[in-house]
Length: 255
Image (cartoon, rainbow, N blue to C red; front, side):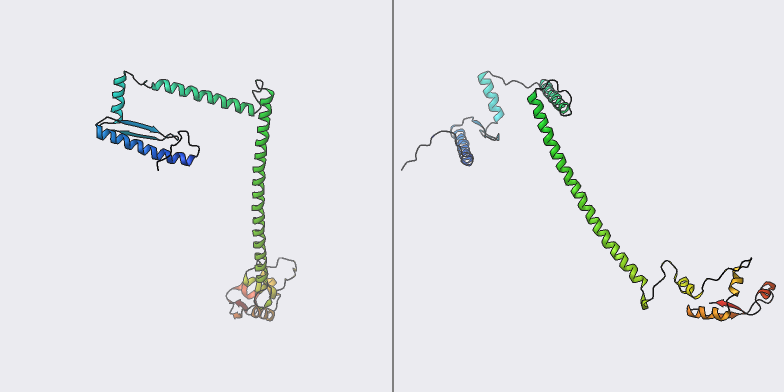
């Protein structure tokens, strides 16, 4: 049973077209190689796919460039040499025209250079600007919502920290034994301050030592023992007239 004839036309299916190209390209290069080997011919093949990929083959005894030169000599034809300066000038001209076009478009979007536009062009620019403004506002609202969420999270964190600090302060104020501690005072002063009530001021130029004399030694001793300290009598300096005149008895020394 023989093979049926295949209709020669463009294959619409892209996958089938690629598969057929690969198979037939391989067959073509194989036939070119067989022709070069069997007949000692100089063969060169160049194939470009639909995607622009190039495939080439040349006889083992020569290169593709040699074949192209031989072709030019045989046909007395020369390929046009590329003028690099002219190519650079053409490219610069194209880029300059594109730059001017872009600058003109920017001026039109900013409301300048509108005299040469028609009503349809102005309507198109207006629609594009409205669409751009809508996108900008949407992005702005997204950023504002993100900032609000961040501020809410910070608020919750600060509230938790505040609650923790309030709980710690309450625990510190109600320490061991259920007695409140005096905040902001050193331990010694907080223990001594309740034992010594504020003394009234009697006027005159009396010093603090004279004011302390108004409290009896028994009260001083009781207050110091309640605070955790003991008072020990000390021997006054009998050679000091000021001390003998101010203190008739023994003084008290806190230790």
